[in-house]
Image (cartoon, rainbow, N blue to C red; front, side, top):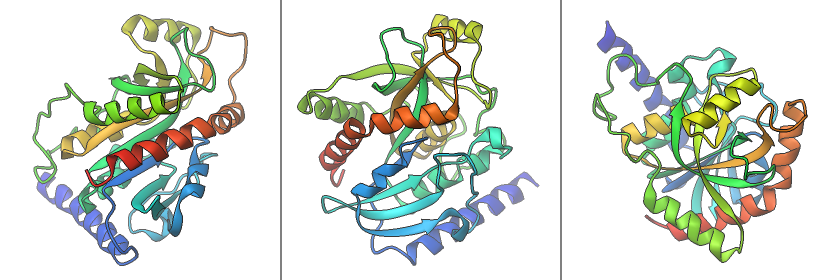
Length: 281
């Protein structure tokens, strides 16, 4: 039974892969997953081919504001790139294999580097809204793991080592880019939670005690399955608000989207320069 379930999921990935290959001229080496409010980065691509999620076999759609739901192929300074404009989340009621289906399909296509981006709440008191932070590690506080169940031997080992979930070489390229742009790029640990509620002040204090610098409702499941597949992963968080109890403010998704838009200039330049440095790696 379990082998049959795995084969069904693999068949879905291959059907999505086959469809995508009929629509694009070449498979890019690098892809970017665009988080809440960061989807405008697609404007940087030339010769775009837009594949809405609903047109790709077995891709799930999202109704979360700021996540348009499309796989976009295009060229960034002559470098072919995939963009996932939005993602689905476990808090929408999806199973984990659905949440990670998009990035797993990219890995199945042969993408070697995937940059995961998100909007997150700041826990580190030196952060402020509008800052960007490079994810150096994560805490999986979702209560779930996307690798639970029979292992996909086609993707990776039963017990993958997570000692370097976020690739040091890619992180070094991001640091070089930030230095060339004369901008501050924080380093931090990302706490991944299930959501959809924002955290309580007590939870924020707990996360800080555990060593987290920022918190959000995505990214961790994707990072786990991509690392399992041997895909190089980098993560960039846009700090769109401070966690509950730090500032006297109520958290609203609309405000988070607005703060992400304010950070778009640095975010855009950082991604463009780093993707250029990655090149054909």
